[in-house]
Amino acid sequence: MSRAPVVAKNAAHADKERLAGAVRQVAAVRGRGLRRSVLVGTGLFAAVVVVFGLSLSYGDMVMPIGKVVATLFGGGDGGSQFVVLELRLPRALLAILVGVAFGLSGAVFQTVLRNPLASPDLIGISAGASAVAVTAALLFQVSGLALSATALTGSLAAGAAIYLLAWRQGIAGQRLVLVGIGVGMGLSSVVWYVMARAEVANAQEAFRWLAGSLNGRSWGQMWPLLIALGLLVPLTVLAAHALRPLQLGDDAAAGLGAKVEHGRLALLACATALAGAATAAAGPIGFVAFVAAPIARRLVPGRGAALPQAALTGALIVLVADFAAQHLFPVQLPVGVVTSIIGAPYLLLLLARANRVGSGG
Image (tube, rainbow, N blue to C red; front, top):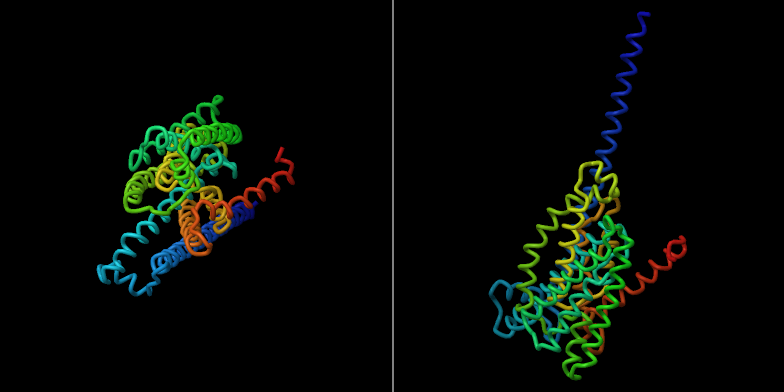
């Protein structure tokens, strides 16, 4: 009988040791995940800086990187200042901002709806911006900042319409994607109808914008997007606190006390506005939002939405694609053509994989 308290004490001590070991193991796994996340983010940021430097130094007038840096800090002659500060710098900065906006938007959409096809360029958000912008430009001769504002309005209106049409006592990711694809196809038909009625020269300009292009972009397009991201990125970060419980499913999230519909609506609104702002600045550059988040999640597995990495991946994709569109082809192409070359095979691979597992319909 006297041994019973000793045995119980030893058992309790063993339980504490096992619990402490489990806690240490979880902390170690989390620490490795955090270190990898930081390392990947640092690597992506370094890659963005390198390609950014190449974009500023390489072109019809090739300049050493030292001269580019000196020009950025107020040195250089008049020619280098014009080339770097007026031609190349706003375009490269715009490429980064557009990539960040699309990458962040795609990551939020795909994570909230738990569907790899939930990308703003596939579910009608970009089509809404395109339909309103093309209609305003070709039928009402709207241009400049007013045209960007109409594109943003179109994306928000399309997002609201898709959300309302998909609502059935809540939002299911599969239903919203299907509704979005249908709405996007309808809006695309509006675009082509308006272009068919327009003058040939005007239609050609609209077509170049629809391909997604940074050609001829200047500070006039960069500053509004920078201001928009300065507002939308912090709002997205705040709304992203709802992402982790939403990834567990609606029932589990509600059981944890999360406001499921409020959190989902806030995240989708931020993602829609990000995609609309990027489309307003550079046109509907295809597949950036679609591929940025999956690449980021493969680089940092187990880190959920990987929003910072997705944003940096989007920036890197647009920078590299724009550099290739300018210098690797006989003629200068819209950047959206190059991103489509990257994204279209991935979409086909994704659909083929879905069919192999029996979920492709």
